[in-house]
Length: 552
Figure 1 (cartoon, rainbow, N blue to C red):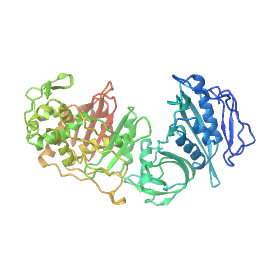
Figure 2: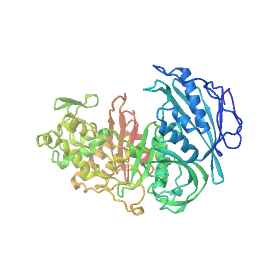
Figure 3: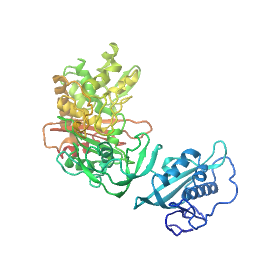
Figure 4: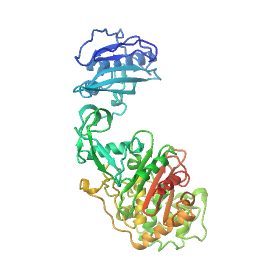
């Protein structure tokens, strides 16, 4: 602890410890009996005064100290009165004691940084004779009340615990779901210790399938949110007694997952997904992201030129081109309803084919050649129709855990042209783009799954098989890209001739460098990756995908 007052912890007490903010007092509260524990409470003297303008350092110090002291005492009314949302704060402070069963806690403030005050909570959770330690750090922010001018704690659920959503509560008791022993398709155990990216995935699998997998629940402290429903456990924060896990078989592959974990560690803000094209079975999902979330399944970003796989299918299906060898113009610049679109460094291809434009990722070819659809009045809907009809994009996917479906909405004006090259309103994540590559390889869409449908009889999305000529053309052009185009360097070490790829980069508002995207397949494994601010597709995302495909 930093210098300042300290407390001796005696049977079942809460304490605020004076520390870096310069507090000169502490408070003690008996969590078991709900009354004083033979100790005194030191409080700031004087009436809290209204002010104007930014809160002062003195106001931050005093407000934070008094709030933490009231929380430590278990004084719901006093603590909540020091916030800008009294009713919500009172319930949260009360729940911390009654629902989370915290019987003892030491709260140690840190030094204020402006209006923010960090603090550490070292708590003891007690339930039916079992106890365990729960320690974490959080922070609060002091603001001036809009109507009163009085300094107040800006209430957020994360004040109580940094992982709490706004509708969240900490609960301790018999876990609603038994633990699960997740295994891959070959029966090899998958743990978050060995495969860190699977942390949120395994939590979601347990939440949905723990009861179906068998096993016996233990006693835990967990986060529960009203949106998930009472009795549905979210992330587990503390285990007081272990349950007996049931075995849950997934479609993942331990070797491919290990390769994916290694791959994403190369870049911050990266995600990768691998899928078996012939079945739709997800073989790996990995993320290296700020926060504990599965961006590979839940992200929503423009996919850049990886979308040209779908655009190419649209062009072939509508007869705008008949095959990869057709001549297609690739000028340096093209306009769509007065808006100019460029190729990278304004390159152009003279006398080139559709294959050439695909493998070199010529933006203008995928806009200029589509203009006849504008005359037919279907330019704004054709891409979305193709995505839904043949790639399952736009249908509802039930993978087994939460995921965000790809979106190719109807567009107008310049956004229509932008959508053909994966910009505009088009949004995807690594799961969606990996599935697009898998569909091109297999010739027909298989909805990605992480657990077998038979486990819960959920409805899977379906799509029509690609016409044979379209599927063949896509594989031809993706192979050309992997062997002699923008993906050649990344895919060169795969040691198979049955491979294909598509690179992509997507510009994002207020981001200096474009996102790097890459989709590819080798034999019966397809993968896609995105690296935020990674530049061009082959530079960052490409090596990630290639390293995962090598694990096939």
